[in-house]
Every structure is written in structure tokens, then in C-alpha cells.
Amino acid sequence: MTPQEVLQTYFGYDAFREHQQDVIERLVAGSDAFVLMPTGSGKSLCYQIPAVIRKGVGVVISPLIALMHDQVAGLRENGIRAEYLNSSLSADDAARVEEKVRSAQTDILYVAPERLFTPRCRRLLDDMNIALFAIDEAHCVSQWGHDFRPEYLRIADVTRQFPKVPRVAMTATADDVTRREILRKLELTEARQFISSFDRPNICYRVRLKDNGKRQLRGFIRDEHAGETGIVYCRTRRRVEEVALWLEEQGINAVAYHAGLAPEKRLTAQKRFAREEGIVVVATIAFGLGIDRPDVRFVAHFDIPMSMEAYYQETGRAGRDGEPADAWMIYSLGDVVAARQMLMRSEGDETFKLIQQRKLDALLGYCETMACRRQVLLRYFGEVRDEACGNCGTCRSGGADAWDGTVAAQKALSAVYRTGQRFGAQYLIKVLLGQEDERMQRFGHDRIKTFGVGGELTAKEWRSVFRQLIALGFLTVEMDRRAGFVLTDKSWPVLRGEQDVQFRKDAAPKKSKREKRPEMDLDPTASDLWEHLRKLRHEIAQGLEVPAYVIFHDKTLKEMAVQRPATREDLLQVSGVGETKADRYGDQFITAITDWESRSA
Image (cartoon, rainbow, N blue to C red):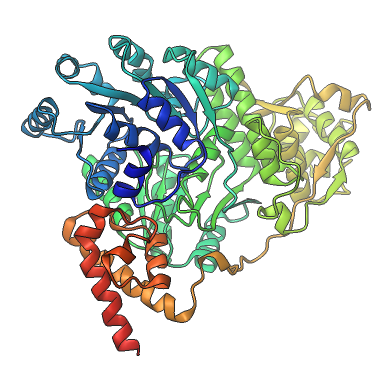
């Protein structure tokens, strides 16, 4: 079969997306490739279709068990013979999978990186005909990346043993440093590189100051995403559990997920997320790598991530179906300080910490930008967008206001210096406002030049000044000073009057308002039929114990609701309906549409 025939027959699509066909043809011809595509752009098809076409079994190295389960379930529904080998299988089940692979009853085999290096798996690889190697989530090979997995460093030791087998490495997020490291460590420096745009135009990026974070989160979900599926990311396990419990108490269908939960609780959370409508998962970054669910309508960051790569990867789990989605984040001065402290406590040498510091600085700069957020995000990944996007918080609000903060910055930096670079924002603000107390008298800080010179700003405004000074790199935090603020090399030109400072004016908190989404709207008649088809899909999925989107995506059901296919041939014209699914479910959905039309007549 040709790539186009496989696309149509098994996956039900008429056309390839950007780069897909070129990657597929290169792998089918036996050559290597490196693929950098945003989440939801169809990276999986780039190795799945060649694995079907080439003789043998496509071996996919994938880091998460939940991802393997979803991918295999979806492939089987499409009529492709797929299996996985990971720690979730019993010894007997693993043996049965291995026998299928050896007897050429498998097209695609997903393998966890840890299992790849076991003697048993190495014997299996020697016994089978390998069509290709696909290294998914390839950024895990990079120690500068945000999801480093040491097992990935050994992948080349395995693939090197099969020099005639084509290899493809795939990721959604990698800056230039990470990209070069992936190619070098996977020995793919000669591979052709396919780099797609990082832009996800359907996602609206918004950042707000944290002001009673739980209430803000509740308002965002209730006012803009009531009854919809989403993910909330928190920095710590404790906060994950607190926020999830609080949301449940507020009547929101929420569940906690983090690596510290018992395995059965994690599995239950994963299954609920895959199968329930309108569920909100509150999680650490341990949740979500490679998530396949297409209808996640929002990703909310209750705490700031540690890099732009992490932010982009996590927000990319929203709107994989191409429909409008939100990337919403709140943060505060305390979050900025906590992120700095976490970085300083991290393992690694000074070079590692320096690079991670730069990544965090870029993320903080994005938070404080007065420009179009999409332009800033894309620029970080080396992509230039000339015009503002119109679909981010800055653009929607008409732009952010700035103010000349040079004098305020000088006063704040001077207060840090004159108090010995050992205090945090709360104490320094008291100094600037002249709020004398016993400790200040003991240290003599009620007699320094900066005592009481900041009366033109409120305590809240001074907190904004210190937050932005840290975000812009004029201050840092050192652990051995008990989180006290410390001047940087960038501070001195400001103090000497050689550099001006512009601050972003903090916007007043606003009540969220649900915005109309014309792309998601159907006319009342089609909308009614769509809901009818969703109920049928839910019943089928429950009976098969698979996620509903494995049967058909929402987008496919919407197209059915508009086109109302009456025959199998009509159904095959709907995007996302391949021959296998038409055979399995066609009669049920056609009957449901016909019956609904009869009742509505």
C-alpha cells in the first residue's frame, strides 16, 4: 500500500499535514529522520504508517505506560496490529506478546526504555524483523531538557546493532541546545531534520497575577470551562492534593495525580481522565507526557513551570483536536522565589544550573512581557512572527501598559544593598514604607538612607516591583541567605543611573467571562444530534473499556452531525472514519442518525 492508501484506509483522512508525507516516505525508503512538531500535529502517523508499509515490526520506544495503552488501543481500533511491552504486563502476558512478535502477527510494538535493555528484550529484537525504530519524546535524552530520562542515553547502544534499520526521533519541544544534544546522543547527526512551526493558533495564552489562587482557578473553570475536561498543574504533591480536594468541595469533578500516589490510585486517575467527560486532573508534571486525549479544553498552571520548554509541552496538551483551548497561568512573587530556590536545590553541576537558570529567566520574562505572548513564545524557539496574534491575553486586552520604574528600581535595589542582601520582600517593603519595628531597630535599618523613601507606592505595588526585578534578572535569591534577595551584575548600571527600567503595570483582577467560540458551535439541530452521537459513543467505549475518543474524535462526530451519512460509503467520506471503524461501528451510527432524523421530523 502507498502512504496515502494507508492514511485513508486505516485512519480515515484524505490529506497529510505539514511534513508528514516527507517523513513517511523517507522512513519507507530506509533513511533516518528527526521530527520536531508541536503537540497534536500528527507526529505518531510519521512512524505508524511506515511501520505498516515496511516489512517487519516497527519498534517504538516510549516513556510512559499510559501513552502506550492509549496508542495501542487506538491502533487496534483502526485495524492495525499493535502490542506493548512494559511493567504493567504479567510474565504470561509478556510471553504472549513476544510470541505474536516472533510469529509476524504484529505491525507495531511499543517498548518502555527500561525494558529495551533487558537480555530478554535484546533476544526478542535479534529474533524479529525490525521495520524501524521510533524514539518518541526524544527530548528525554537531553540533560538540559525538562523531562530527562537517563535510560534514553543508552538507546543508541541498541539501535547501533541494527545499522540497516531506519530510525526516527520525535519531540514537540526542543530549543537549539536540546536539539543538538538529541541528534548527537542518538547518533542521528546525519538524519534529515523536519522542523514544523511551533505555533498552536487555537490556544489562547493568558498569564495573570495570583490573588487568592484557588478562587481564581475556580472562577476560571466555572465561568469559562464548566463541564469541560482540563488539566491543572501544581509544583508540589501536597498542593496537588489540596487543590484537587478543594475543587471537589466546590462541586467540580476533579481528581489528583502525582508520582507519590499508590499505583492503583494513579491508574484510577488515568482511567478517569481517559474515559470521563468533563473531568479536571490536578497534577504534577508526572502526569501528561504524551497524552492522547484530543478534547482537553484547558491547561491551567497554578504554579509557574521551570522553563519555556516545560510550559510549551504542558500547554500543548490542550486543544489537540484543533478546537479553541486555553493555556491559563497565575503566578506571584512567592512563586518566582520558590522556583529560584527549587533550581538551586536541584542536582547537577554549575553549568547545568546556569543553563536551567537561563531557561527559568526566559519563562519569567514571558510572564512579565508587555508584548504579544505568542510572539514571545515563538521567538524563544527561534521562530519569528511579524504580527500580533490576536489570541492571547495581551492582544485580547488591547495590550499591556508600562510605566517608568527606574527610580522605584533604584530605591528597591538600594534597600537590598543597604540591608546587607539578606532579606526578602516583606521586610524590604517595610523599610521602603518606613514601617518601623523592633527587628528593624535592632539592625539599625530605621536609620539607613532608603528608610521611608518609598511612600509613593503601596505595599502591593512594591511587591510587583520586586517580582519584576527578579523576573528581569536585576535580583536573585541565594539559599545560604535564607531566601534573601541579592544584587546581580545587572543591578549596578541601574543604581548608577546608567540604565532605565520599564515595568509592566499590573492589571486589576477581572471576573472571567466565557467567550463565544464560533469554531465549536453547531446550529441547534446539529448540536442536538451531536450530543445524541456522543452518548452512543460513550456507551460503546464503556462496553469496550476504552477512552471514548478511541472510537471517534469529537470533530468526527460533529462532521457526522452536519453531513448525516446514510450509507457506509457516505460514512467513509467523514474525516476520521477508516474502513475498519466503518465496518465495526458504521451500522450503529448510521442507525442512530436515521432514528434521530425520524424522531425530529
